[in-house]
Image (cartoon, rainbow, N blue to C red; front, side):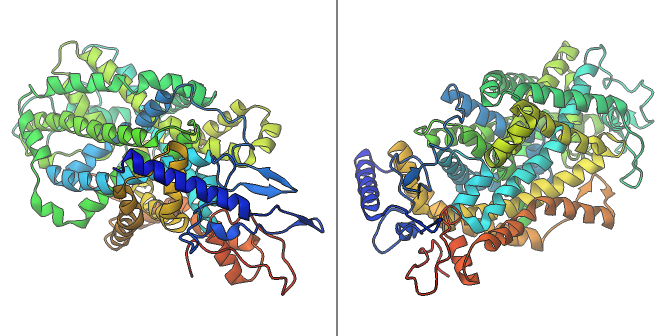
Length: 638
C-alpha cells in the first residue's frame, strides 16, 4: 500500500492539475445557435504529454464530464440532486454482501466444484478471486460511486463505442431475474411442504416414489434417494426432455406469482426499503449454515465427502474447463458484469471508502462458498453411504443439488420439520437478496435514461417497478411447466457461463483500457484522498485484460453444449440457447453502431471520438472546412 504522505502528495498534484485545467479551459460560446467545442478537450487524453489530468475537470471534483453550456457549467452531481442515498453506509455493505452471497454459493459453487473434481476446483477459484474478482469489483464500485449512474450510463461515459456493454449488463440481469426467481419458487414449495411430520421426502411410502427408491443403506448402484424422487416426481413432475413440455404446474405457477409479489413489496420504495430488509436477509443464513455443518459432520460417510471437497485431483488442473468454470463462478457469485453492485454503489455517499466494501463483499462471499461447500459435501458423503457408491458417482446436477442433497440431511436431525422450515426460509432470503439487485439494475437504468417521460406516463416509480416485475413474471412461466427444469438449465448455461465471459471482457476493455487506469486512480483520489495500490494498478492494466481475453478465447474453442444429468439437448435447443446468449451480447455491436451513427464528422473522426471518454457529452457543431477546430486527443491511439 502507498503511505499516507505519498497519498497526500498525489492528491495535491491532482488538485494542481485540476486548477491548471480550469485556467486553460475557455468558456463555451454560442455561434448561430450551436455550441463550439471545448478547448479543454485535449486534457481528456490518457497519458498526454503535458501530464495534465486524465479526466475532465469539475469545480466540485465530484463528477466526470462537467460541461460548459450557454455560459453556465453543468455538473454531473448537480443535474440529479434528488438521487437517493443509503440511510447508513453499512446498509450498502450488507446489500452488497447480500447480492454476492446468494443461491449461487449454496448451489452453483458446490455444483461446479463437484463437476470439476472437488478440491481441484479450489485452486483456480482462489487464483481467480485474487487476480480477477477483487480488482474488478473494486473497479466497478469506483466508477459506480463516482458517476452516480447505472451501468448503461457509466459505460456510455467511459467509452462511447462500448456503451452497449452497459445495455448488455442490464439485459443479462433481466434475463437472469426471470429464471432466478424460479429457484425461489421451488424454495417456497419446499417451505410449505415442511409443515408436516414426517417430511414428505423422508420415506419411500408415497404415491410418487419409484421402485428403486431408497431411504436406507443399499447395495444397489441403481437406487435413488427419497429426496431425489420427491424433487423429480413430486415437485417438478418432470418429463423426459424439452421435446415433451407437459402441462403447467399450477402449484408452481401460483408460487412463482407469490415470489414476485414478495420481491415487489421489498423493493418498490427503492434503496430506502431495500436497505432495511438486508439487515436480516444478509445475516440469518450464516446461522443456519453453521447449524447444518455441525449436524452433517456427525453423519456416517461425511468425512469421505469432505475429503473429496478439499483434496485436489491434480490432473484436473490441466483441464481448461476447470479454469473457465472458476472464472465464471467468480463473475457470477460476486456479480462482476451484471451491473448490480455498480448500480448499488451509485447510491453511495461520494467519499465512501470503496476498498473496504470491496474486501468485505468479496472475502465474505468466498468464505460463504467454502462454508456451503463443507456443508454440502459432508451431505454428499452421507448420500454415498446410503447408496453405497463413490461420491464422484452421485446422480446430482444443476439446481437439483440444493433441493436433493440438503433435504436428505434433515431427516437425520431432531425436529426435522423445524430445520427444514428454517433452511428453506434461508434459501428464500438468499434468493431475494440477489433478486433485489437484478431487478434494481433494470429499474435504475430506465430511470437514469428515461426518468421524466416514464414518470409522466406511469406517474409513480412504484408503477414502473410493478411493470418490470410483471414482465419478468410472464417470462418465467415456461420454467413452471413439467419440462421447466430443462428450460432452466439451458438458460442458466448460456447466460451465466457463455454471456458473462463476453460481458466481463468488454467491460474491462472499456474501463481499464479506453478509460484508463490513470483516470480510474484519479477518481479514487478525489473521492477518498488515497490512490489505489500498485497491485490493483497492475491487475487493471495488465493482468485482467490479458487473463479475461485468454479465458474468452479458450471458452469459445473448448465450448461444451448444455446438458442436464444424462439428458443431451437436441440441436434446435442448443440454437435457442445461443439466441438466449445473443439477447445480451447483441447490445454490444448495436451500441457501437448507434454511437458511430450519431457522431458527426468522417468515419475516422467518429471512431476517434467514440474512443474518447465522454465523447458523446461534448459533440461539437460541424464547422466549415479549414475552421481550425481539431478533434480531441484519444484515450486509445489508432
